[in-house]
Length: 416
Image 1: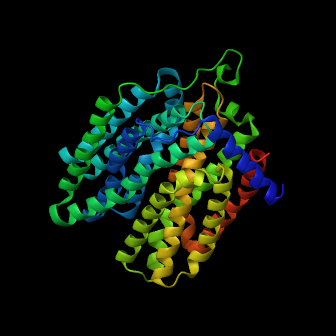
Image 2: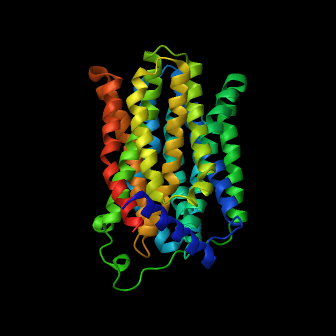
Image 3: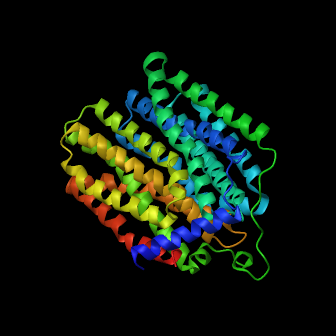
């Protein structure tokens, strides 16, 4: 398909949906509480990771303990992701979200009452599992809100929704670090627990009912028994989505775990490395804030293809980032690309999921992402000694590049 033909198809697509009135002009009223719930609920995780890691190191725990602590946030979500998704499909998103936010609050309270290394592991398991339940229920709800609307509307909503996660990723570590330096670890943990109380209030008082996705019809894939995860991979579109999601998750985790190691090897100070983390979070926020504008001009796979190309280029360039400003710029660009990928991936997944199995489809994506968060840091730790950082980064570039043909096929399929 030629570029001029692609543009003509996009123009007809946008004119058709605008003419039919399927792109509402106002901000959906339920979306703001969901964004705030994600922001305040995720603070316990983003701040708890920093506070827990620093506390463990401050009491003399080896780095292996810190690595295991970080993995605990993802172990239970990996094992239970499919069950959580099926739970959402069967009983609805609201009970799952209420259960999840209570689990996060319980986990955030544990180190306040019992400040110790074992308490950190309990905290990590509860917060990780609870926020995963909240996230799957929230994503399912945003997709259900756009039922019957255009892809442009659905993508715009997912872009707004993802802003809560981006904001908490920047605010949580920043607030925790300030409180640890000036008031101590217990106060930092208490602050995260207090912010989680806001999430609880929002879930129980502001979310009375949530829109439900359509139920599976008899004889459809969604109603088939047994409900096995491999049924979801029967469709080519879902295979493209899940493979791309796997490569993105691996690259995201590789970037996070290698950043302190590479920064140290390049001779950068802790403040510069911390600034790169902050610029990464700012980059995700900026790109997601632009999503409503981008959604009117490009389709999901087009944005995904561009984001994946940027990630590959960043991984290729990082080993030569000898200047601090270049290191920071690459962190910001990587954040931009990751920020674009999540809402587009969620929009594609919602559109492709079989009727009545939207929660399960999200659960499989969560399983892939959390499994990556467990395995990639371990693999990096085993390989970085004998191989060094550069070959691992270039391997990441090769991995994300391997998904570019699938993304290109997705572009051609949607522009037909």
